[in-house]
Image: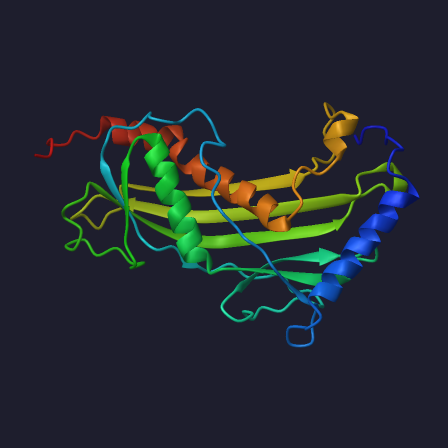
Length: 257
């Protein structure tokens, strides 16, 4: 059940929200294929934001292949599925009527997610390396203990005026990230481990019964930052998984020279 709304926002912040939308659109006057104006966002991994799994793995060598990006924008008026220059669609912003007024774009996701997986694996205690190829070839990677193949299936952020009118937060941003992952142990073709990783991050949190008035204020200014948190949590959840950790710990291997 939704908690009683706190009437603290007022017309001033709602007006500021409208001005933010207008200002962003004015700063990005061009449109993408006749749709909403573009806004370029930065997405990055936040090291050590997720706690609890650091240095829990043995120092094995894991090669992170370049993730394949198969995420698709939602079918909605104002959103294009086409890249903008060298950037890819990663989200949108809506006005009070639900109309898309900005499209968010970011750099290609493969290198971003690959770097995030590398950093997270390093935090876990593994020796992480990267490769520009995306497909596992069992006879090619004999100098590493594991090879990770991955696919980005969801990568999207939506920013809109907060729910509740003048009784709720000025802005509400939600980001969703989903990954499919397979780990191989060269030279075998049978997967050593397979699994998915996903995370949803809301800024500020909605319907949180333990929230205080301060919690109803957004933490991050940019949608790309909210998406960065979701990506960080999704990636970190891979190495925080007990089933993967148990497999690696129980994997008896001949020590390398």
